[in-house]
Image (tube, rainbow, N blue to C red; front, side, top):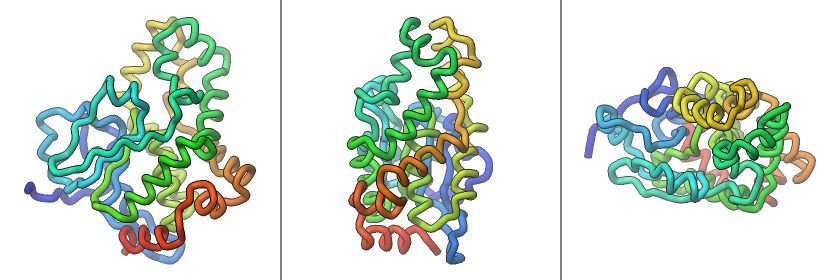
Length: 265
């Protein structure tokens, strides 16, 4: 077994996976702190180069949770850390609006319909509503919480850009741990400075589809308003965040307590 690497969530732990970061260090309303080195969020994990494998393998990761669609997983398979379980935990039905955006970008006609003339922004708000109401999302995020609560840890969860599906997963876990909304939004917005891999890919697809980068930008970045859409939609549909967790996700009070005991110091 390699030496476990001591990390913080400052800077870029893996330069070839720029949105890979530690959720540790956040303070809760009760004065506790999220432990470092147990929960990581990330963008796609197929880009890790050989020079960074020793760092990646040294993090002690025991679960890799892949939130992507079948097409994404098959096209860009993950590099799994040594000794880790690879778990497929999809949070988007392939037929929903959000699941097909990468394929839409490869079709010039679809791309213009989905992304031009302000459509990209409307698309993103729809994605964030689906993440808290779609059956696939509810099942997937319940599974993510259960895995974080029961282990083994350390655990990394990710999608492609590590900002939307992963962003809601991080917001959910941090909310359950008692981190305040302002800190959760700050963690979420940090993805905007970590999109080098995604930008390169999306700029190429946009150019091939004849789109201007400004048309695609709402999909390539996160906004506080996107995340707030999920929280607001939870109140509209589920009554409250607590109702969402208990009734929609089906996460028990015992699981939340176990998560806190595992993740907080």
